Figure 1 (cartoon, helix red, strand yellow):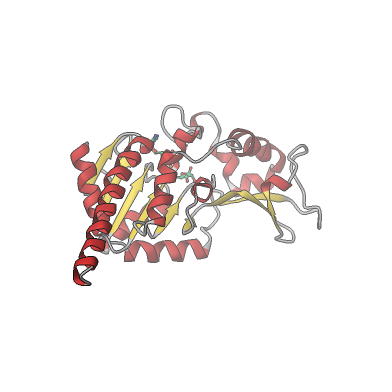
Figure 2 (tube, protein in one colour; figure 1 turned 135 degrees about the vertical axis):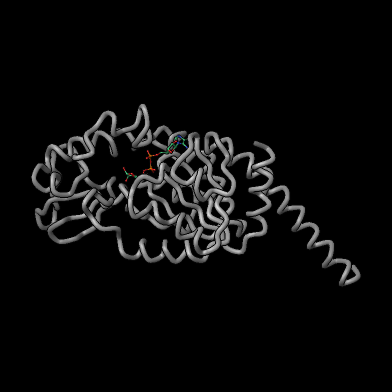
Length: 265
Ligand code: APR
């Protein structure tokens, strides 16, 4: 694995524009289960509760499940090392954008600034009547379904339900980032869900090198991944950080030394 991490670090250090594409797997070590796989959420809950047509017909039942999964359960989740390393990479100009399928807000809470929320964000709740946007923490879920205090309209989490379209801004910005990337680092996604799962293929066809981090193989592993590092995101990203930040510091130091020589100091 060390050799692959070194190769990945070399690619990332040489890259002019790097994008991260993340899925539920990056948040598993924060205590949020993935959707698919043996103990995935879809093995415990019916994904129908996140279908927009079913939500509109059965708002109370849908909200009961949504509250349990995304508000009672996720509420305490904190960013893990993988989120923190991506934020540090952005700080050091080693990462340009994050395109996330996740709605848990953990990239932002880790300090990442350029985050495209392809499936929205559970920390915002919107009114389907007057379109007001509320912070989820300001909305009581004691009585379901919650309604808008301004117009009485039905409230809905501001994330994309099955059957809803992807927010236009996130869609356009994500496709642009994919087409501009020298390197795309994919972390923790099966690549099962359209249209998000097309992003890595778009990046590849635009000439991007693909690094994939996952505990299992995915739709990308045997097809477009140039480097596949198998394992948990937290530990791998920590090792990658050591390679990246030590090397980039050396490079910085080399750069400083060269400057000093040139200017004869
Ligand atoms: N580190 C890295 N990868 C992990 C870890 C971990 N600790 N734990 C699990 N994984 C991997 C799994 O092997 C799997 O490939 O994370 C992936 C999780 O897959 P999914 O649960 O399908 O999540 P994701 O790919 O993000 O789903 C996409 O589906 O239900 C919709 O809208 C939902 O955004 C979600 C979309």
